Image (tube, rainbow, N blue to C red; front, side):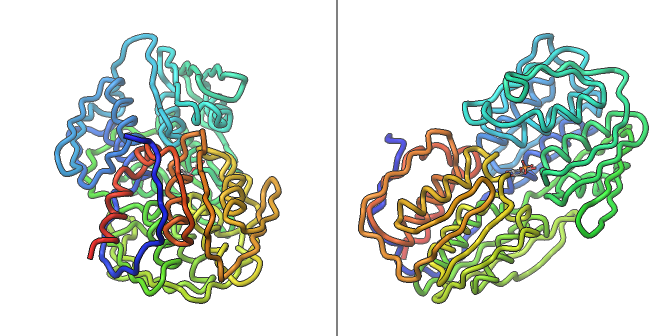
Length: 441
Ligand code: S3P
């Protein structure tokens, strides 16, 4: 089977109701929390993707029994907060997942034996110093490749000290790793965090763990105390807004189409894409809003948008849209006028340097951009119709580059050859199947 896809036609108009798969951030966190829970935790609608399977493999290596069942159900047989049992010289492979790689280090701050953490080619280029630095302050020891990257070894400490930590990148992964480490440390760990997704904090609240959050205008103060026991965690995972994003953008860019995506997580720290696209004139409605274990979920209704407006994107929305900017840039490509997205250097810290890739894809489509290290200006063209051949090969496995390119091909026409199809397995293996449903009469 070729690991690429050829697209030569725009998508026909559609009017459908779909469901996308479970949220990746919540799925990985469910695995990690349940691995420390007391008793059997059950999940429904767990995302079965390579990143989540890597999390399952990791906790299995730490001595925890996991049973994957049909229909995306899973059971984890936790043995309590100190229940990990594992042999010396253990290696954990986080594969492509920054979330797994960074969060699990927080759970291992007190490991009595050295553990090696490795990842794939893309993850091995990413910054792990950002999470090793605060964990070192607790007392854990690290050896990082080139002082920054994987493979790394962590050597935990039995005499952890609570820390004061200022999280300035807006990284939920760093914040969560420190919360996990604080949960294993006597005393009070205090985090001053720039706003980022808060699934870890909401799960702590749902589990009645000693973690408090005080919100201020531009930051939050999180206090974490040592946790003695974690209850089992039964959870029905809502659908992923980051996976929905490809279908949201496709609907906006297509002609005379409508789409409803059922039961998507609309946590306010994740819905930047909706605010941004609405500012650009998109018709998006949230229906059937519900709260489930502290998380907001809703159906998302989207309609094609004839006149897309350019945007000077407020930087305050960056963190809540961080995984969606590639498709947001596509929408800006069709806007009337010049759009500006700034303060986005974090985008180059993802599975591949996505700010650069955003510009690259648009340039291949004939859209002018001005790119700096942290910003992009996009000269939109509302009449854009592609006729040429475009080849996308990202080299570093990046699922979101593949899926964004597919949306571009189906929205703007031309003849596209898009490589690295397998990359979707890390977050959204069902992407092409669900796309197929939009084409069915
Ligand atoms: C994630 C946090 C974000 C995001 C990633 C998932 C999480 O990364 O880009 O896809 O689940 O905590 P950063 O923490 O590096 O911003």
